[in-house]
Image (cartoon, rainbow, N blue to C red; front, side, top):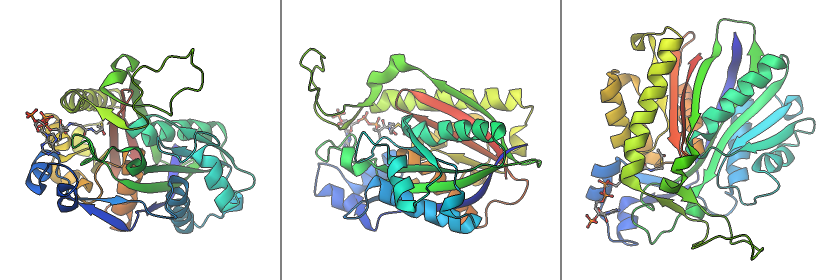
Length: 324
Ligand code: ACO
């Protein structure tokens, strides 16, 4: 039917940054952060934990579970907005680390929706090229892009990586369908500059450096509405009843966005996987980290229907159905 996931893996940096730690850095409180976001802790990279290194560790764990070796991988896709270099891609660094000699490699930038957009790319690639094997990774070190003097944003983000190994199978499972969207007109509600331009003729007014900037309330409003719309459209198109969904795997932005989405959809809360309290918002890494946790906890059973959804900078958003 489509591209199936053969194995999952994740890698979370060791260092924990708690709400109490943040109380010492900006004017905030554990109570404010918990009640507004549901986040208690997030993990922050240290030495040897660059984006490509987290990505490589997550990939190794996914490959081990899938019993696939690096020389069998044909394509490596990394969804990220926080690679340590703009060029080469994070995926090329991962390819080098793994010595996955025959793989071609590239990054996807769709902010928090990167893994979902990558999943659609990979599904279509594998349908066209059955027999190939793909590593799809979401990896971020958002701590390198967060202004720890800005209490509006620094409480939200964390670091981590998740990975899946995929292959086309002519079986009744795998990626069923996706419903993806972007609206570039809303770019200025959530964005991050690169380093200032070297070309004086290319204007970059008020470039404050590569920090995440956000209009939190607006993001909140759009995120709930957009994900609800994408999900409802997809279910209708695929003639799937919400009751048939075994587990919802949403991007872990914050608990209030998730609660609102869950109540608008009317899905049973127990069917929604949440780990934002531990890791905060890890952007493109959040969905594959959840997939790996759910998988290793035995929450994913053959024939389960998974509803994956995301929203992020761009804006970018969407929903995907996966039959496990
Ligand atoms: N601690 C204490 N007070 C704070 C903090 C903080 N960390 N941050 C902001 N405040 C203050 C504000 O300055 C404001 O004070 P004022 O009224 O004196 O001006 C007050 O709290 C209320 O601020 P709001 O922005 O209105 O707070 P809100 O209830 O909207 O919560 C939040 C802010 C948590 C950012 C919320 O808007 C939100 O969840 N937005 C979604 C953003 C998000 O998840 N972005 C992630 C990227 S996109 C994605 O992944 C989907």
